[in-house]
Image (cartoon, rainbow over all chains, first blue to last red; front, side, top):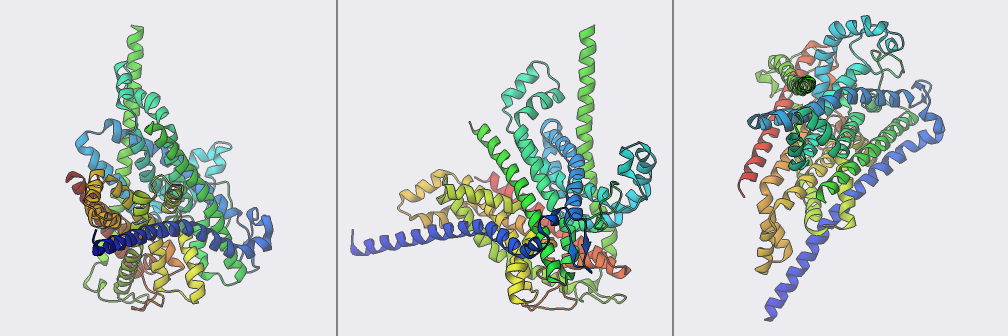
Length: 317
Length: 283
């Protein structure tokens, strides 16, 4: 090798080193980002946690005038709306996934799949404005009076459907959330349904199973972990969804047994009150709510990811 | 005869289940069309010559969304320009260098969490590390929050797309004596370009309508402002404010902005999908 070639070789090795380390540095940056979020929220939340102690989690108070804050109504609203979203959204999403993988004629599979995915592309705020001006009046005038007159009279269950039909409230928020998580859960479950080995499916058909029996006894048991992963992913979305909920939940720091009553969620409280918070303790209490939301969604999303990785390993072997 | 009865029952049950799954799909599509219909019905009256030329009005007078459109555009552009290289390099590390390493699997895990993390949390984070030290809301802070949402999307698609590039290409380039960084930049990136571009378009579609992270970062501005160091108007926050106001002309503008954002995003989504479909057909 000539000296010039050696110099060029060394230069290229230097570039290689630089490039490799640059990519590594940015990968570490992404890693630090999550830690940074955790620390920044923790620092912001600390004064509130220190002032109220663990009682912050169980307190019903929310009084900016007296500077007293408690997280319970917001946590309750977050969990209640997400639970409703899952109850409505999961069966629908599984239905769509079954339709797309088992029933749909191949030439329609792509267009219908794309249209369902477009539901995920519509921004949260658009669901909010639609929920406020279209869905809420519709529920108030047609659906909720019927619910109150029928289910409202049954003992115990009736407690869930008490009160006047306001249109806005926990139920409406849960309904909008169900629409919003539908495409996410469908996308994951459709993909895991496709991992079922064709031989298993064909064997079941060969034994005379009907399509619904194949889905129930072959596809669902085989992909159970993946389905749970997809549902958890949807749950993670529902818990943190902000704008759509802010428009339709009614924004009241209250807990009612009735699903028709207004409430609030952690994210809706943040969206509504953060820029108006005047005292340091108020701001810190809002950070504390954000911290709680982050911990809850982190756990749910981590569990979802873990399930999906497990399914991937199973499919890989 | 008994077995025939059972067979008939199974067939009926099958029909019912399949009808239910079809109904679920129909319901999903009906949702989509109901939302799009409401946007068109309420948004079209807002479309006028002044929508794009005048700024947001005080209640009761005529105006448009020019300042909000500009603010959204500029923050989306800055966020994409910052977020894309970071995301691409991280995705490159995951696919080309870190394969199988502990660091790569941890980063992949964290990235997937960030991908679904509530965007309002990102807003709080940027408020704490940008707005508080600067002492005021600003377009820079808004762009930073949006960039943090772009990164995980681009990381994910870059990694997936680089992995689709056949190994033969890497080996062929290496056999010619090409240094690894050149193999990646000049061969692999070029081969995966359409896929990466698809990811960037999806990321733009994702941030174009993001509202929650802008509430505490860019805030809003009633007037035309091109100052990146000051609060800036943007479509999502204007929609939020105007839709919840009691004034009819503000609400009309909110619907107009909502229609504008949604159709931009849907077109971006469809284009991205077409680009992805096209690239998967040409080997």
